[in-house]
Image 1: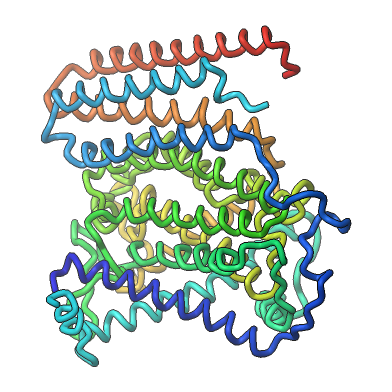
Image 2 (image 1 turned 90 degrees about the vertical axis):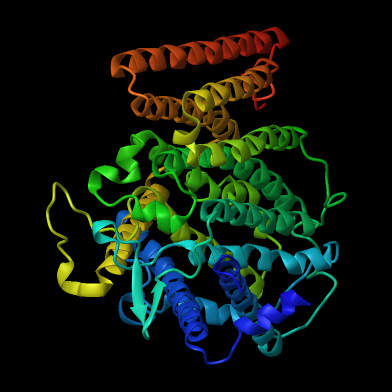
Length: 121
Length: 405
């Protein structure tokens, strides 16, 4: 196997051990802990009173908008990281290209800002 | 079936390389767990001293075994799963938080000899290897990917509880961590710009003198942005809106009890340690000794472990900084949090990144430094003006709508 894949295999081994440890902790606890279920214990917590309505209540749409906005910057990272490692190779041409790209991106942020999306009420 | 064959080929039991990998995995794992327990104690003790209290002092010498006692207690606690919850996701979420917290350690160089441009190779049992579990060529991307998976753990934990406080905590968590991940990635890009590699080992190797440490080479700003964004990623105070006790009871983990809660708790402290390790690796040269102006390595007498000791010392500094943050800074409001992230840190990180790239290319092709400086500042000012304009328009619109603040 190539060294390239072996590195990732080490990570997988590590993940496997972490998984085993977590399962082991839960398993031991499952054996020794008491288990006396009752209907009232399993009610969702709502400051000590009976829960009102559904637990999955609606939340503000703003959280979702920020998630959408993030996608823009995440995609940008996909372009910026490889370019940053090869900065010298592409030189001035690459710099101008990236400048235009970042500028367009910034325009997106400015647009969102102007629209008041970044305002949290 | 070639994939399986090569897998079997790798797992030749008791061959030396396999043995080394096993040793490394076990050592990192045990040190990680013990470190997490000590971190919990350290945090409680330091905060106690800052607040003029004594802190844990009953279990073991100076209260060192307090975490162990707490953990043991959690083993004996009943495990409750709310009726309304999504049972599968509810059980899955602690794993999603716990496993990535550990995995980051795999790519952090933990020691080795980086002096005089060496790349940190050491000899164990006659085999040349690195004091690092894995050194994938895209190590930094793996880091970002793992920190994204950790978001899933918190988000799904809150959502699957089928309860209101955890749900609020989880939507807050997703928006907050996502916002700061953008700033985190952009400040990280400046490090890549300076070091020219995505491999963590390469990043450490390129910081061979004090002036080449990324914190200096990138200008201090990306480090400051990274530190703030990392604190937000960790949901630590002053950015702990996810589990703000005064508003959300316990946030995303309100409905968790027993050892499932302990897994979240462990993951949180583990993440604090790994994030300190990441900061040290990226900005402070990892296991590189602190050598100013050609002075010798003051820990030279420790021989081969001096790199590891340096790393531990540096990590300890950042652990203290995180505890210090928690003890001194009040929690931000959610709108302040979002403003800081989107209106200050992201534009600033982006601008600094472009400025740095500009300077690097300019140096490379021999442009006049003054011209570069003036042009760079002019472009920055233009962009800042643009953003200022946007902010003004936004404020005007707000007034027109008659909002209160």
